Image 1 (cartoon, one colour):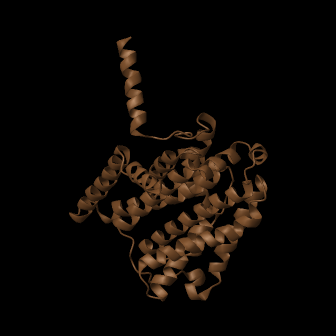
Image 2 (cartoon, rainbow, N blue to C red):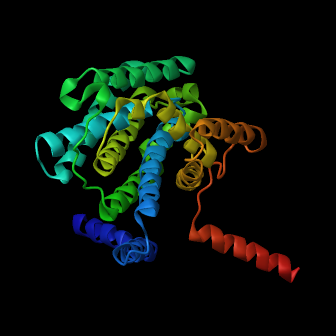
Image 3 (spheres, one colour):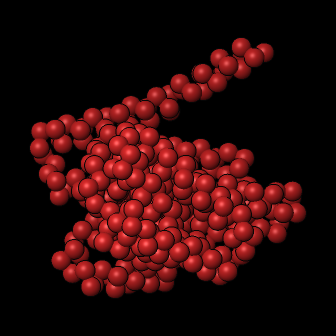
Length: 328
């Protein structure tokens, strides 16, 4: 029986859908790598590609907490800062490889997420938002006052390690883990909590445990995003991880669609590109972000994708519907 189950698991792993997905993932990687190698993608474009990748990771982590589990968090930038500073210490101060730095960054952010989640996730609604906001500001002020990491003047001389390979496969890992989590029993429990926490409790779901689990996973990936950021920008300042950064991440999630992985990806791409165009007008950036959020809330409160996901199956379905309409 165990051998049959093992073979069945292998066959499921190497089914047609997974093979096509793997082929697409590798094709995108090698195509972009080719353009980077021959100089077609310059430093400015690549910087925006890096920011898009980091924002996708951050948005997916927050979407898991806020969009799929229904817990309103305003301290996501705090976990990013933990990952950034831990990885910077490991690579710049201790001289260890980036792989160790990014792993320790993710684990550290996840551990802090667990410690913060234990008391705060027993709160609901506005109380949780205020508690996570306070956490983010506390973390920022802690780094402000630690001379070992540069304090208010910033942590510089961080080695450059974040390349296309690290960025791309970190994004792929995040998408795969979040997608599989949502489709698992734990993911369905989180969605049940979002829809009606009281009903979920009545059905025997341990709501606190699953909220903490989602919070820890979201913090884990925020730590990875912070590590990638630190070893690309090579300069960290506590101000970079304040309340406004948490709002930036939240806007991406809301813009793309709370409860949609595809929405987080599209939202990160769209808003990062908009932000790049607005670099010449930094004082208008938050105004325009606010206007975007305002119009989304009025005209499309569910966000760009709502809770829907983009897939090849969706395109085939739409194509079939169009063909039927033409036949009629």
